Image 1 (tube, rainbow, N blue to C red):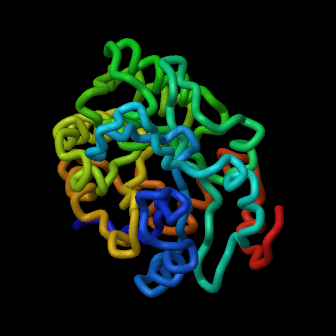
Image 2: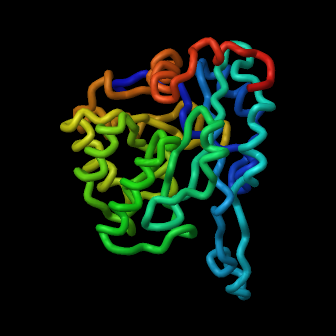
Length: 267
């Protein structure tokens, strides 16, 4: 694989209805696999799917798939460390317009340790390259957004240099997503292009599973292969291990490293 990745910066639990395990199950499985840190980044509340995509005849029915805003507001109920595993309070927000607006307010996002912003087709209709570029850049300019998720989407091409240069200037992160090989195979070629430019521009990246079940935890083999082929250096990968990831979070968020040793729920 070329890289050893000991953190999970992008995972989903049953709070995102199309995922399959509880937080506790994910924690136990992560510890068993020698993972040092897991970020719970359930989908924001705007994620939805129309009935026709699921085979229903009634096309105007909408099923909401993301977590309730109160879920994110109450993540303080989790300790930041369980046994040997660091637990990161996070969200995968949905970009819902070309101005980069995400589907959680900053009053909630500022309480998170880690926020990913992603485009999902049910939340945003494809537009022009300029539209998609602006959406990503404006999302990156939100002070509480830390990373752009799985941006290789075939229906949402963007000016790669403009977005990656913004990410580098703002010390933000681009995701290379292993789950894309399962759910978004049409995006793989774009992911390769993005990885190459990340390598050339020195942009920080995460290699993530985007795990929707315990069986995906720890497997970033395909994303790592893309990163290695692109020439991404180890120092660009912020989630090699817990200390590296926590250092990035603390520097970006201006928080003290000691808070992540808290084994009790609370702020």
